[in-house]
Image 1 (cartoon, rainbow, N blue to C red):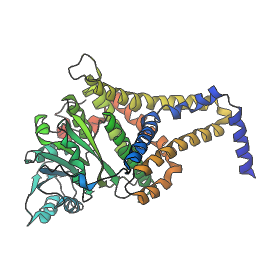
Image 2: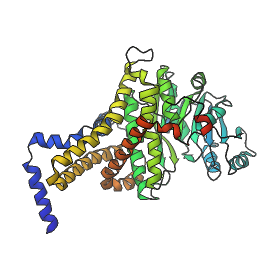
Image 3: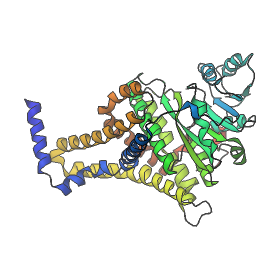
Image 4: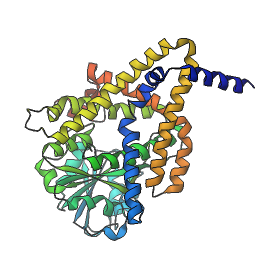
Length: 432
């Protein structure tokens, strides 16, 4: 009875709102992230629904289209990954013809080199490189790039695993000579280890699988995950490989775009990686990821959005404008506007929060339907989607991480203190 009375009271409060007042309340949900993710995904799905209906086919990988088979060098760089390196190498080995495999141990102390060498014993085409002093992921990848003789370089994290057709899928966009980098889909290897990992697993399916598919089609893709991505070897070497991270994966893509190349997307090229199972580890991981919009898009590569710059292109300007608006402006707007709303409707705070939650849930439900339409693992994604009722709350947590990371980077340049890059490297390189 109590719940019924509360529901009736809430409905009465909503019905009493004027249209312009209702829109003003929901604007923080409808106009912050929804245009970037939900609206674009729905438009893409509706377009494909009609197109595929006429062609009588469904979205998904099509093995018969693997007609591009260049030589491939897979570089696996890792630090203290003795427990996972053999499994990662096994997921790559013998999964593609004409494959070169280079494993770089970045100064590990746990026997990673020995574990990699044990797997390589008796198998041709595998090179294991041991670096005595840790230099960071960028430095390790560049050490592996020195050994690459293939047409295409594929980088993989040392704790990742691939599907059998992942490399085939990944390199197909490189048939276009204008494409120099290809983004894959990263999935959680441990989706149900905790509530935090479950939410991340669902998030990855939306923001990596669906969102990058959408951005790739419009030419606005500005990231290739460091866990799994492909690059044209000649272009990579011309650019001097990877710059010092953290965030070396996003930085490289902006440099490729500056050089005039396009970034492709292979949504059905799958890589599995372990995601953080604790909220604290997730917090610090996302801090490292989120602040790169300040270090790269605002500082290092800000000229991409300046009309009089030599690196200016309309596609690059649109990419930078999107990043500046959604990853910086909208983060602060979300909290400022949200606090103003709570103060304005303080006496009806509970009603307000329920309305915002239901609006956010509706938008997420639309995105879930898009995910299920494109899914090539329907049962798995249906199971992941059971966490949907908690996802709007998870997004608020992510917004809190965003504003902390951005503010700390703007005010204190926290990226220069990140142990992801060793101290001796950080102190001898430019801090963006």
